[in-house]
Length: 489
Ligand code: BES
Ligand code: MN
Ligand code: ZN
Image (cartoon, rainbow, N blue to C red; front, side, top):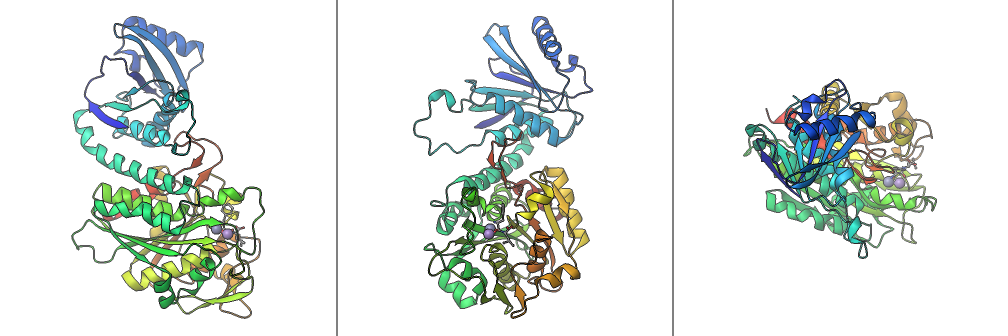
């Protein structure tokens, strides 16, 4: 989809999209229209009880000298903020994507939020993403028709578009990785999809099974050992500071390309959803795509621990004891609590290799997270209040929201093992917290660390204003904003 900017509303046949807030008069958006069209729009708004509610839409076809033109007014609710504008843009795209319209014009000059038109177009792009490569028999009518987006905005706004385009590309990469089936996005397939980031200046490195064995990553390898697919560690590094920022910020992603549970097998119904269990790794890859795409002035390393969790005669057993790269031993009581086993070695490795001051991990780690926060916000656990605040603020600003949950000694005790240093599961209660406590045991002294449990936010069963049902790309906007606000001065 191409996005272009123009200073005045084009009088062509493109579908025209006008945002309107609850407290705004419709006169604000009809002033550029002919008297008849303006009047028709007002009648339609009244007749359909349109009140500017977020993402609600009133639509008319206006007769113009270029033929019938579709005009939509989209509600932005109570907010003149970027998030509402993104959602309104997404709602318009949802309605028009397969409508037959080929060109859309967004005119958000009624709103004073920063880059209002860009935010609408950004939301529209997000909502337009889909994976159609496996639909070989889809009727033409069901295929996306929209090819062009035009944004009506003050001249200086166009210069800022690059950043939205890059973040969108990051979201699209994350959604692609999550949506593609696990027979394609196995560990090697994941790496293959990320290799092109090298063209943007990202340094790509991988560790294979032999290298990880030599490093002593017994926990990660234990998860992988039941699968015919070899594990990989993917390391992506972007330095936009010319070496000025010595230590990179580290992002670490859980990349379980399919989670059957292993010998502690998950129930059949719903197991198909577990292709999304690399959503943390996908968010890290997407964030690297976004940062490199917009040449962020920061130094960041993204590490993805990529494995498949399968049952087989070679799989690890409940009660196996593995030795992690850190030297700590883990009693594997439940092979379905595999994410923490993958992450602990990836986290230890990146701390040894890059000595980061700040490390953020993202993982679809616990089902308990969905029970606690549902699909709306991800859980944030941190050993540092300042880092937690930075992340929560980035969440609010970007729309990828976070809610902080506690850590503490009393929770930590729950994962002491009677036979090894740690066990990989605690009691049923506080399952998301004990998972975070497990990870914290692999954080070195002095490292500011946060763990984001995105089990509820990486995948949706229902559509939202910004995504069709399925992969959300959660975390890309968040990490991009976190870096922009705290490292780029
Ligand atoms: N990938 C799952 C977490 C998950 C479950 C995410 C359901 C989204 C929906 C993770 O590997 C897992 O299986 N966790 C277990 C841990 C338990 C065995 C301690 C869980 O949450 O049930
Ligand atoms: Mn699992
Ligand atoms: Zn898992």
